[in-house]
Length: 397
Image (cartoon, rainbow, N blue to C red):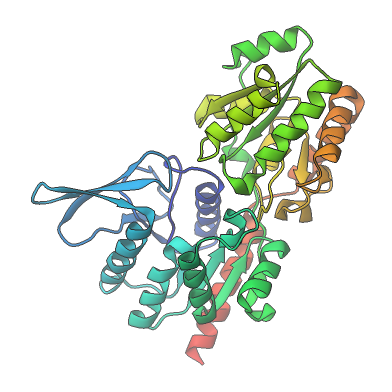
């Protein structure tokens, strides 16, 4: 298994999905060796976790959050800093070197950052590769073509792959349309949630200011995710302006970090709702849980969201959601209100409707809880194992 992150050293849903899928696979008698691009203590017992190191490298450390930069500490004492592109290249060669001394039947690689490594191992070890697509470059670029280098890596790898897993029908169709991959080569396997991994919300919420506002009659709308063009937060801020006009006692809690942080803060100020929008930055642990539990409504306005775990996470804390129709999670949830990401007025109307009507909030929350009770990683893991077996049978014949 080739992946770019695992909890607790993750920036978002990719690491969570990999972790929970692998745990479910291990319970299904799959022996996993997970190779990361950095070194850290993950305290995982159900699989072996390795760091892909270049020759002469003593340690590889992440700097900041997720896809920022990496610090290489060499045995001779000198240090180097690398961005995500050079790190992907180094990871490719390090994984290929490691693979020569490892015994395995199949390679399962998650997203473009690991795809070059998968291709190299396929060539050197003559084993089938499955590419797991959690997003394509046009998703991350907010519907634009994005980085041509990344697109080339995605296209080349998908053409050469033995099988492709897409996290939604939305993602499968994008792979077909943008990279001309045959549809029968792509299997849709939806992400899920492991309810046992959620810690209940505490009575003492860490957002004291918001708690006080709620006691004074305010409602809280939250969003948790990366502050990037993909996530559609510019439209959410514009919708917030409309919502505040209708319901002045509304506060929007924006949780996360990313390149749009300053732009979004400036936009809220320009629209005259700076006092109604709180930016908390990236959160983990209790603060992350409290970001959901403090809310009366969760909104995921993504421009292009291949799946989207956060509405499921919000539902665990009893919070209903308004989600973008341009999201994969729309395909498996019927208990969330949906809206086109670009329809600011309709987004605002739905937010206002839910905040005004307690009965509607309760109904949506109860319906979402019932849907969550039917979800687990058992079925996705079982389908992934079937794909492994199919590929091995083809290789043997």
